[in-house]
Length: 101
Image 1 (cartoon, rainbow, N blue to C red):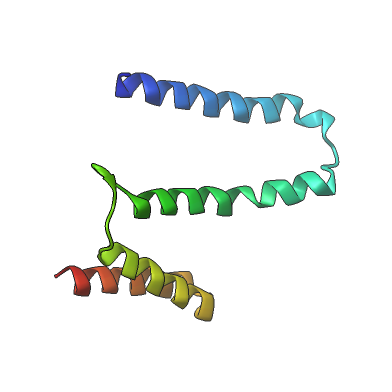
Image 2 (image 1 turned 30 degrees about the horizontal axis):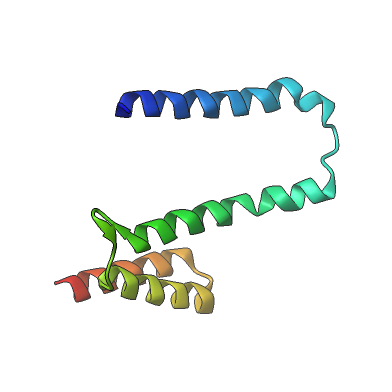
C-alpha cells in the first residue's frame, strides 16, 4: 500500500476519534472511575509497544543484541532509580554513543 494512503488513513482515523469525543463528550459529564483507570494505562502501553518493536525488530527480521539493548537497560535502570526523564535520556544517549563508537 502506498505510504501516502496509509498516512491519510491514520490521519482520518485520528481526526474521527478526536471529533467523536468533542461531539459526544457532552453526554459524558462524569467519566466512570474504571474508564479513567483504563485511559491512564494507554500512554505507557503505547510507549512500551513502540520501544519493544524498535528493540526486537530490525530491517530484516529479529534484531540481535547490540548497543540499543544496552542503552535500553541503562536507561531503564536510571529511570527507575532517579525518576528523572532528562537524566534517563542522557544516559541512554551516552551509552549508544560510547558503545556504538
